[in-house]
Length: 119
Image (cartoon, rainbow, N blue to C red; front, side, top):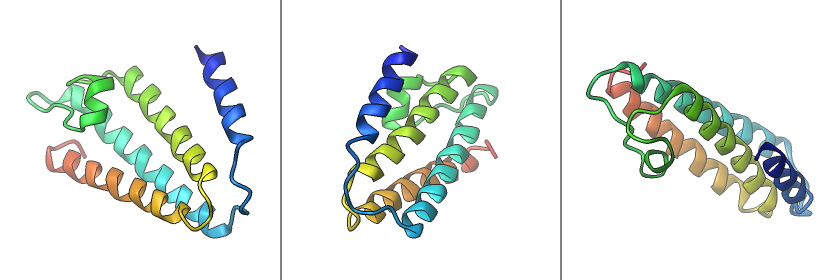
């Protein structure tokens, strides 16, 4: 499975949009990646807190209500790669919207996780 994922990443990265990748794109992608990591850290703590469950509709489908550390790492590692690939595939004028969405969505998840005592 790991080899299939690696092959897909290589194939998709070769389909990058021809618009140049800018310093702004890099900065926004780093922020998006940081928020995904923050979401991963707080999500991983769900298993240690009774009566707290994964609420994200997509994450809940893949991780279940009480995600394990291993599943959380795999899920959010894939999320980081997908976020970068999606940004690379988009034209320059659409990248900040995608990256902004990623930042907002994962920041909201971190806030919710912290509100549930996971910070």
